[in-house]
Figure 1 (tube, rainbow, N blue to C red):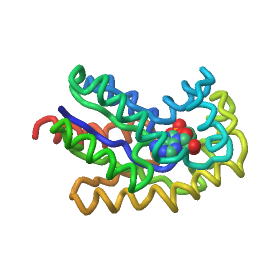
Figure 2 (cartoon, protein in one colour):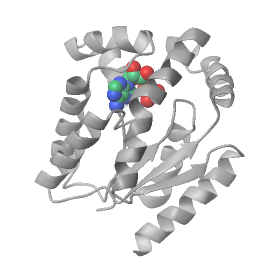
Figure 3 (cartoon, rainbow, N blue to C red):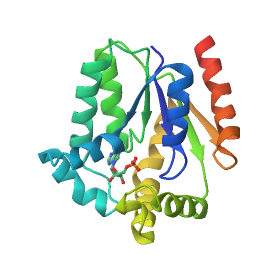
Length: 194
Ligand code: AMP
């Protein structure tokens, strides 16, 4: 299996690039944001619990997200060529839990591809996305900045975690989507050939 984490702050292009990579490399996309929005739309207990955090731009508690990922891995690990995780892990506790879940299945994360984008560019991109995304958390600048703050405080340390495992590659995330996809593809081709 080839398992990749697409890492970066909100608005760094993870969703867009994950969709491109899934198509080119035939991997399974796992976005915890999408999974949580599905739960919210279905008004499940998990969705209702997550909603208040999401609306405030805060991270949903680790145990909720880890439980969701655990059942995805159980459902799919033996049916797919690999996973692209997008928006997960977002805390060091989630990264540790993912390592444990993967160990149980004898699989690993091959690489963490991290998209670097400045805060002002992130806010601009998310507000633009908010014009069409139908997401309340994309429309309010305070909520967007709160999401960036959560990223800096809780998620950025995840890059260090994978850096210590020699799995982190940083990619310039500003430029045309096509140019960024080329940079990601270069990395992916190296991994596929490895
Ligand atoms: P995203 O679509 O990745 O931008 O996620 C939207 C929102 O869902 C985030 O602002 C969080 O409230 C929540 N969320 C998504 N993924 C996670 C995660 N791995 N851990 C905690 N909260 C998450």
